[in-house]
Length: 319
Image 1 (cartoon, helix red, strand yellow):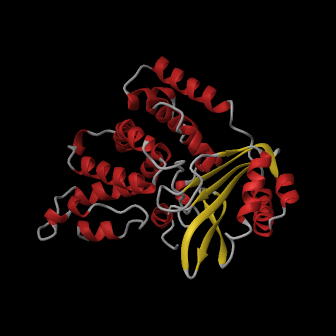
Image 2 (tube, rainbow, N blue to C red; image 1 turned 90 degrees about the horizontal axis):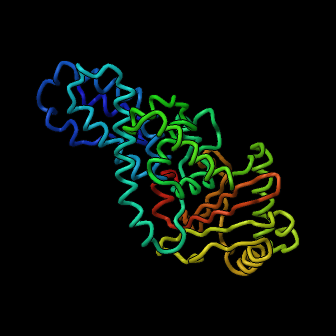
Image 3 (cartoon, rainbow, N blue to C red; image 1 turned 60 degrees about the vertical axis):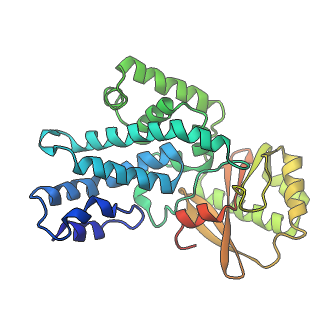
């Protein structure tokens, strides 16, 4: 099988770069290139998982995976003892570099920035045994960390890398790696709340949607936690609140007001996004948004409105 045929068999979620193999399309592949593709394909879900958790963007994570492939293809692989370590190191360092430049773009983003949703029902390999490490609230919390802290925490928390390996990947001492994870854990631990079972999560999301569509203010206030926050990501491409709404009364009144006009002709389609229940919104045959909530024992803590259609389409092709 030629290299470009091997590449066509890979998952459609993470596209391999055409420029990575085009030069060989009319000639015999180098003897070890098929092996390189096989190794990379086996490790690609982890590479994408690291990239997506670091960047919060499906499109950027795909680009990073492609750049990692190019570096892997151009490396003298005979001297690489552990391909997994090499690829994880490459992807993590590329992600840190990307984050350092992305902060400037995020600051110029119109309104709240939310992570791109990813269809984990269609791509379960992105999930890890840790469960909630892909949730919208968790990814948003990661934005508060420095790039090295974020990398160390993701490698440790989501993929259970030992500290000596994290130190190698980040080019720091083991003591420094432990400190990075410790600082990140302290930052996140202040706001991270214990997740509830998936069935209760779906139940509360459905109840919230019923109350929001009907404008039932009493039901909304009963479902929302006292310190609930509602985020609306329109990216300047759709009408959305430019600042997060904070507090039970304010969030409930906002959704009560929306019920007077927003839900006319809107259809709701249940999906699984980032390992949690969500709904796609469509009108007149066109998908335009996604709603998800974060839930704890206190009720609904976070409401996420994603109405930047470009982000929805990139992450959920079925939309």
